[in-house]
Amino acid sequence: MNVIIIEDEKPAARRLSRLLADLNVEVSTMLHSVEESIEWFQRNEHPDLIFLDIQLSDGLSFEIFDVVDVRSSIIFTTAYDEYALQAFKLNSIDYLLKPIDDEELENAVGKFRSVQPKGQKLSLDFEDIKKLLVNPLEREYKKRFTTRVGQHLKIINADEVECFYSENKGTYAATTDGRNYLLDTTLENLEAELEPKIFFRVSRKFYVNVNHINDIIAYTNSRLKIKLNRYIDQEIIVSRERVRDFKLWLE
Image (tube, rainbow, N blue to C red):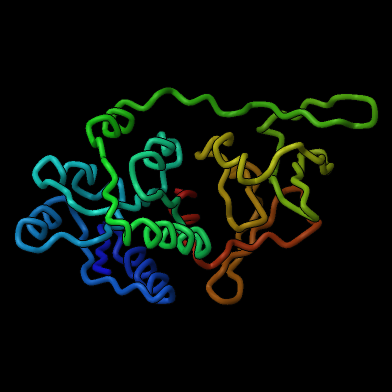
């Protein structure tokens, strides 16, 4: 299997390459810009699979294919979940949100391996996908959540939530009044519903609200510990693979 990575953040590209090595997938080339990628494609045999970052330092990666007739399968990678990612799911092998999760990467590679022996090539309509990126629809994120308290239905405003967390197969909202409310949803569903400028998923277990962070402390193994204004029930640790993206998000 011939695999290349197109990613403008070199540390992210190296990390992805290491994760792929753990899956016995060897990366032959790492490219970091639209211009560099065009030159490479014009001089080299096209790979079986491309891990393609959507936004590169010198433009959208789709600009590569304005010049080059792509003949590879693609797994998109992006930090921007506000994009219409379902379009990528339909037009590519898969898409992965950054920071890339080990299990999701393994599933995406498995999906490609199941397609490759059959010689299937997926049709990519870059023009349609570019329209979704360049002229994204206005997204309305959830401003309120409801939960049942006894016989009553309580309204919780999103800006009052210090964090969302999962525990014992339930999803909870910890609010500024020091209460924890069970919600009828999952953290995965919340991913598409929360304002990404306000909420960040620091680990598999926690989403935090930037407006309620009281302190950020260096923690073991290059991780970070977050202290919120009221929530103290559990330690909130930024997982190691999310630290860099978390720092960028803070800025």
